[in-house]
Image (cartoon, rainbow, N blue to C red; front, side, top):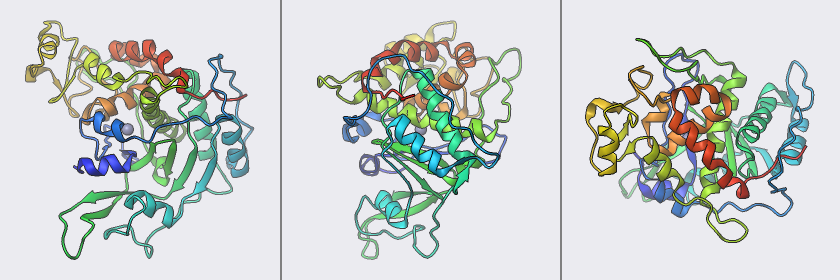
Length: 367
Ligand SMILES: [Zn+2]
């Protein structure tokens, strides 16, 4: 795991995705561990620009501009995300851009990020990816009631991560750069980076509640579904920032949101437990700040087991912390609320009853 120093400075939320695999979805959020507090304290405050419509009016969504078989053009994409969502800058990231992200604008560090092997990603003058991203934004706004501010969208071939190592004479920075080939997107402080591999991702959602003796089926998603789900997960992290950002009157909207979410659905410092198991011992242990019995611990290998009462929707949901659980919960709430409600009524209820709290810091798409 990366140190807290890295997560504080990096201020990015990264996901590992499982490309073209029909196995339980496995992603990692390096640097966050189980502590959202460290991240939030140092998160870049999210400010709405003056020109953005921040009203609470119901959203009128329009269908994206018609696309050809080859997909939407880049020009259409840029015009649409600027006009509709208030994005200010869309770019194919340069080597220097990626260096700045990985090194925090400091001196280069050794490792995989080298100019001689670095590649840009240009999705092209037209691509279906553009339309999927816009649909991902629209679906999110329709499900949640608005969008966290996204000022920059940058396309990169691949994610690189800064990793702390011991300081030596040869490596005075005490860090190396490491390729993260399975990261589809990340979001932090209003910047959304999208990586080439997102187009080959396989982001599944269970078909419904797991019952009887088998886990619910995980239908293979289309590329469009996977990209829209990645977008929803990332914008879900944007909601976490929105909840922690002061509104126009200076009031932080929902300071303990992630902690409350975690407590509600069974997260403890030793992992996730089935908080709705019928004997009540898990609930009681959590109330008394004790570790619940191991028999009720939900893990990446048993997450889809029908024996759970409060059923997660992915392995990744249970893998890291309540912070990543929330991103997955938002993704399911936006893209298959019926399944989320059937599997995880507590998660569904939490999101459904809290989302209005975050609206003052969300952006309403323009028609
Ligand atoms: Zn995440």
